[in-house]
Image 1 (cartoon, rainbow, N blue to C red):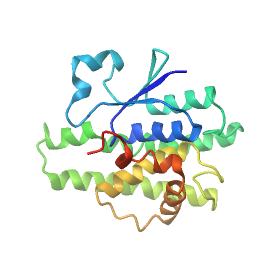
Image 2 (image 1 turned 90 degrees about the vertical axis):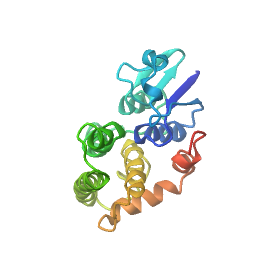
Image 3 (image 1 turned 90 degrees about the horizontal axis):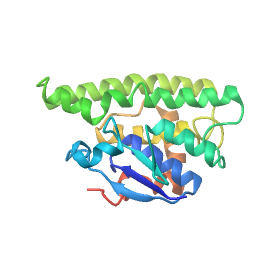
Length: 213
């Protein structure tokens, strides 16, 4: 199977997929698309993605977009190690944790939203920073409570990494990048540390990508 991953080193959604591919032990061709420079808006990229978003995973000429769909595809085609548990209830619990990040935190702080705040809405950097901090704190406070409810485990759910961890770790990186204080979230910090002790997470981090700048 030939796979190409179109991604941007700093994209949280791309980071998720890199983690998933590494956990599965799958090799792929890394193709950088620089979001900050607008390379995703060039005509050459339009056939890759109808919404002009990253990541895009190309498998034998077929293209998949949206990180959550990509990770579920990888789990179905390459089921070991699992990103989602076998039991339906546990699977739903992991999906819910993942979506607390991917649907409730990340979309409010991605690049195109932040550019709209400082561009068409004409707000300054201080307003953008306040926006970022507010939504990360709001999301992490809820996630921290949910993780506490699920009990003390090394990862978000149980003792092996899942789709939830693949979503959480990039969001922690984003919070650190924007200097969001994380002292109120000890469970999140603990899980992040466990994840980053694994090569699959460490090698996927933005600083180790070929297009890191």
